[in-house]
Image 1 (cartoon, rainbow, N blue to C red):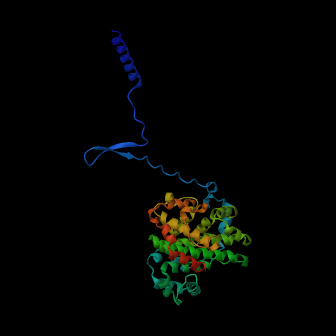
Image 2: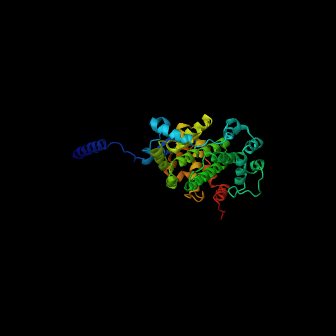
Image 3: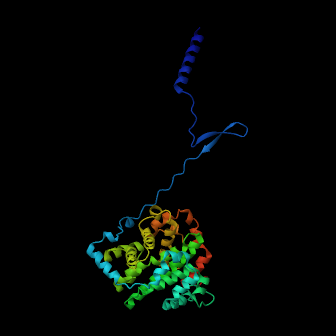
Length: 371
């Protein structure tokens, strides 16, 4: 009887312990699983990995965030009147430039039409042929007429050369000490335009001719600014980065070079759409074209990149494009540009920049030989 009573007590104690312990729990798994049907009809577990976290956007540099891009309407009336009067003192280019820049001419003109236009300006024609035969373009045979130049260099390159010399009629430094800075800007313009022609073709972007034209015209503001600033300070101004130059320009002249160039082109009565395109190219310093104009973003981004690279090469800040990767360019001037690199049309930009043909062309333009 005692044994039966002890067994009963033990059974109650075990039951109480089991009740307090609760059912066994499996150790937590680091990943969740979902059930899928195995080929034999048995259920099997497939791991579901955690969702990838998108990288945080790159913070805008403090100096860029602090900069306010001023426009004509932001100026004090008296200051604006003074600037407009100074701009009107810059000579107007030949009237043939308006024909060269007309949308109809850019879209449909062939080598014969371009030859006829250029030959109507004998001095410009002579300068164009001299440039075409210079080492900059590395032609193997001498070119004696505009038609041959189109054959060897293409319409887009030749149109850009013609445009540069038509603009040269308006921008002639009054002092010899300013000539070096003007020569640097002209060289930057030529390099940027040729880069734009080659990269635009490699990326198969639309309207390559109008894009290279916009790149050349984006330097009009720099040429105008160089005409308005004291000659003694030009080299210091030109050696600065684009953001720092813009700040200096606004402090001294009321507007930055990009806005000054657009204001000048309006007084020249150039097509409004063309002026707006040039303005959009320059404004990528302070805003991403992926936000403001996603349709034209690849063209605007490429044009802005070529303008900046042309400056750096002309100033000697870059000796070559070998090893250059725009995605790794941490310069404040290219901050908003880097956002546009996500556009599918620019997916092959890094390969185009690294192409041996482009590397050789850059060395040729800079007066160097490939190793």
